[in-house]
Length: 467
Image (cartoon, rainbow, N blue to C red; front, side):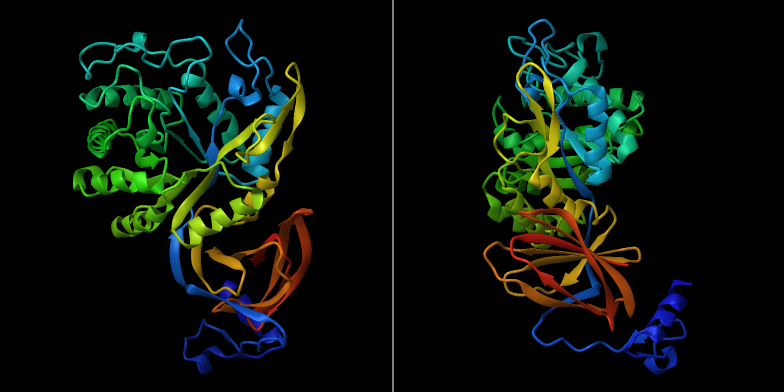
């Protein structure tokens, strides 16, 4: 039916379509006569036949609502935040992040540092000397050590959250590299608890930033050993959880560990993604991309917090287009107004004594130029660019999605998008974010002869959806 409809649209187009017989493509194909390039415009060409990585989505790391660090307030009676977002507003924020913005991923940090003045952990003292016998009475899963994160995931799922995974911020103080079996016992206790609560983790990261752990850097050999041991345990107990490695602080540190793990066939079978952060050492992204391609494992950028909103849009583009990332995650979904960096998508407002509301940041809107339209399962396709403009293109179902970034200080560009192999005629919706616009809906236009025109304004991110 879709092919017949396409053929009818071609016949109705101002420009002629050759018949299937004339094209030599068989009885169900239709070929349009491409329109010529309009005078005064530059061409951006899309080739939907040349395809690259499949997009896994966009996300953030999670903070629980009553973590003192969110609002930078503390109640000494409870050990939690003195100012907490009310439940009704929590629901609105979840809707903003996972429905309106279209995020589908969240990462959380078990063994988050304890509240002020409290010495604790999930397993503050080793339960016993046998890593094959777990004494759960010696584990504390309360609050932000674990269970508050389970509650967050359950609350966010109805709004569109699809993927969640742990990435331990610190290990227990008694853990060392001499006994990776003890780490695996600890991790399995966490993973079992999530499964018992009906939210089995799709992924699990061995550690957050293993090169920068407070107890000392984790060696590549330790990441390898824990990956093999944990992977075997997960498989034996019927988990679907895949392991993320190494979720490290820089691409360089990530490569040093990932290359060792992935060289081992036993470990490699358990790995679901190669992850890194962007805090220096960026040149190794090329090597991480090559690793992912070598072993057919997706590459994820799972944390960054130091970019202005427009820089963040460029980072999303670069990670996807230049370094093959399938997922791109900002650091925080929400945080308090005391945090001055561009580390979050929603700002929580308070005066130190009371909650005052929340607002979307400009990074919320630049992120949405991707996350609202480029959905998990979309596949990046080949696209050319023009001077000073960054463009990515994606094929998802019957849609072609293009995102174009035009830098500030440039001049408006009249461009013509040529959809080689695309529809003969279709409607194009356009949405733009700039310094003065947040998801501004622009007048719709039409594809004619597999081509449509647009003007790209300086300092903007524009998304085009061809349906």
